[in-house]
Length: 223
Ligand SMILES: Nc1nc2c(ncn2[C@@H]2O[C@H](COP(=O)(O)OP(=O)(O)OP(=O)(O)O)[C@@H](O)[C@H]2O)c(=O)[nH]1
Ligand SMILES: [Mg+2]
Image (cartoon, rainbow, N blue to C red; front, side):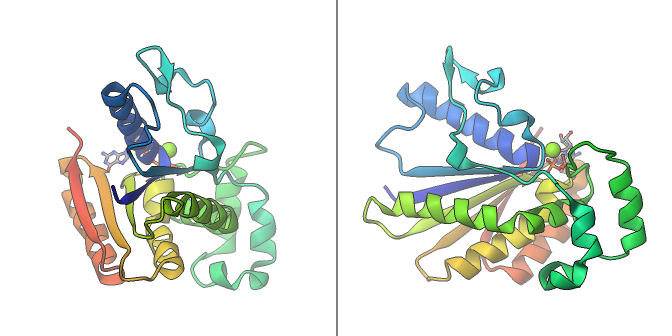
């Protein structure tokens, strides 16, 4: 079987991975059957679905939660420091926008962790601040899949479009994957889960994905 890496962004991405792992468990009676060459990467600024004993990942009395190597928390820490020294971050500087506006946004989190909060640019910012962590985890997953001897990997990227984390990070995630794995043997599938009412916005994002990345895309009706 060919290699597949399922990448879930934000809460919706995590829920898609969780549903897939439950279906696999129901079929095979184990979470990671040897017959399937599937890796997972769940990236979120909200860690509530990442706990080892989270009951929502249970099926037929068994826990199918992801291992730590499959989880990338991009919760924000010290974002103000990035803003104060923005010239040191050329990869962020050009799109981050008005520092004053950010001041108000970050203040709303007080001393708590900064999560995407349905703000796409914040989701992008959070990924940018954690990009090395993401790249390390991505490479680890791809290397593990390639141990089978087959170098080809299909990347499946899943997320919702109305949140901050998933829709804010999807373009950069695709770009990083294409940069790291440019070989022609590598293919991409972007699974965007969105209700029908969002069709206009969905199309805008999909066009953006098509123009910037030649990977295929499947739109889902979540209803
Ligand atoms: N109507 C609609 N709701 C959505 C869509 N995508 C996500 N949602 C809802 O928006 C909320 C946030 O969705 P998440 O998938 O958790 O968003 P996220 O990518 O994690 O981003 P944040 O939570 O904002 O950081 C949830 O209540 C979702 O059900 C969408 O495309 N359409
Ligand atoms: Mg969320």
